Image (tube, rainbow, N blue to C red; front, side):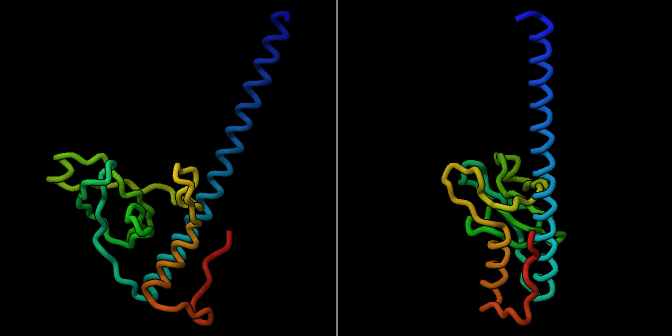
Amino acid sequence: MSEPDGRTWRDQRQQAVRAHADADARRRATEQAEAAKLVAWFLAEANRRGLRTTRLVARGYDGRGRYRTRLTGWYVDRAETRAVDVDGRFHLLTVPGGLRARLFGVDPEPSPAPLVVGAGGRDGESIPLRTLLTRLLDDVTGEPDPTTRPAAPRG
């Protein structure tokens, strides 16, 4: 293969990789926008129903330590590792931990909410964010009443 042919092939390959990365970034941005709408719907519905908030606690990566946060909101999953705060931000509540975290607490940064919680995880268990948020509202307030409850937005 001559040098110009090799260069052309490399250029085409780099262009294909860039196009793939751009398409993936657009897909992630679309999913994050849809998930943000779901979280906003949940926040409005939780406030409308007077859903009680709780002081959120983070867990260490190893699962053993529990660390205070300044966050107030609602745990989204039963493991209490994901939450929505009262400002409508989604948080992963797992942190490095350690003595400093034990003494002073932690401030987990908000992250984009996923449309499917647990997707790509090793245990193979995943659940749509819409299901978790709807279940949280229904578990706390009793049986759902489709005539009075606005439906979660469809993506």
